[in-house]
Structures are given as C-alpha cells and as structure tokens.
Image (cartoon, rainbow, N blue to C red; front, top):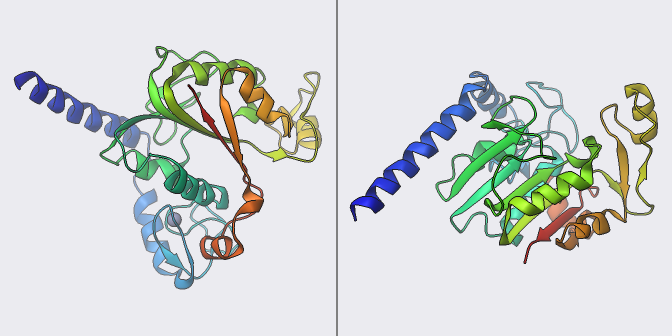
Length: 264
Ligand SMILES: [Zn+2]
C-alpha cells in the first residue's frame, strides 16, 4: 500500500514537473490574450472541438482579429487540420478514455494545451527546438527513449521536414508499445507518387518544388507503403470522406488525411 501511494505521489509530482517544463517555455500572456479575443468572436456558426468555443468566424491566427474562412480558432488557435485531428482522436482512439503515455512530436498548441492537462495522459512533448509543451529536445531519427516506451504517438505535419524520414518512422515504430497506435499526418497528394529530390537543398527551390521552404518532399499515395515498411499496419482515414455537415459545423477542410498506424 505504501509503495503504491509513493508511486501515486511520484506520478503526480512527475505530472506537475512535466507541466512546469511545458509552461516555462510558454509566453504567459498568450492564454489571457486569446481568451479576451474569443469574446469578440462568440457566435453560433461553428464549434471548435479542440476548446469547445462557439464562434461566428475563424481568424488569421496568432493574436489577429482579422477574419479568415476556415482559419484559426479565436480561442485556442486551432487550424482546420487540428480540429479534424481532434475529432479523429475523439472518435477513433482511446486517448480520452484510458490511462496512457502519449508521445506528441512537435506539439501543436491547440492540442497539447489540453492533452498535457488531461489526468489520464502522461504527456511527453518532443521537438528539435524549445517551444510550448516541449519537455525534451529530441531528433526523431534518433529517439533517446527505450523501445516500447509509449502507448500512443501523435505526429502532425513533421515527416515532410525530415530528410531521413524512413529512419524517423522506424524510430516511431520502435518506441511504440505493441498494441499501441500512432496518428501520423503529412501534406499529401493522393493522386500521384511521392516527389523528392535530395539535390534540391535551397529554401527557394524547395518552396518552388515542394510548396514550402522547409519541406523536403511532397508525399503521394505510396506514403502508406513507406509507413508499412517499418512494420506498422496502416489505415488511411480520408478527409474527403468526412460528412458535409461535420465540415460545416467544425470548420474543416478536405485536405487532412489521417494515417492511423498500429503495432502488433
Ligand atoms: Zn478552439
């Protein structure tokens, strides 16, 4: 009994320290600023699933008051893709119902501000640079955690930045427990094969060829096979299959395809 109480206290302490590490890199005024801004956008047109706010229109993000259709939530700054990802996690995973260790790669603010505070989640945020909700600096092509470390992984729009993406995928597979899942998304064109060229290295040329200065490829329909190579079983949940009413209610776009990967 004593050891289990000690363990519970240590768990709580770890949770508090983790949260402190997350918040210490966080600009303190962001949350109050967004809470104030959100009051100007109250309405009945949309609901943001990430924060529950009911709003009349989305914004251009940051602390902007300017409107942008299907843009950022005025309360939590979720993008359309984050709202889509939240709904997927809520409907298709155990993230909200079971105790689990979540590895969030390059934490997205609108999601991690909630996940880091959910009592059922041991939240581990990693990135190559310090930013809100990053508790450890990690290069995901060489993850410094033991195998079978976590129960779930969220990796949203990261792999298109990584030259050795196959190595990163193998690492994600390695640190995931058998029976666990990884939600992976990337910018993708499902009508063509992956386009990459390692000789294209300048930001200007990468923007021209891959759409963004920091991207090293544009993924295509064969991305699913690239995930399978590491051992994942992969299910593609297409953004285009989301019901029209759901898109209208939550301000979603068609372009976010979710790859739900499991490890047996
Ligand atoms: Zn929101």
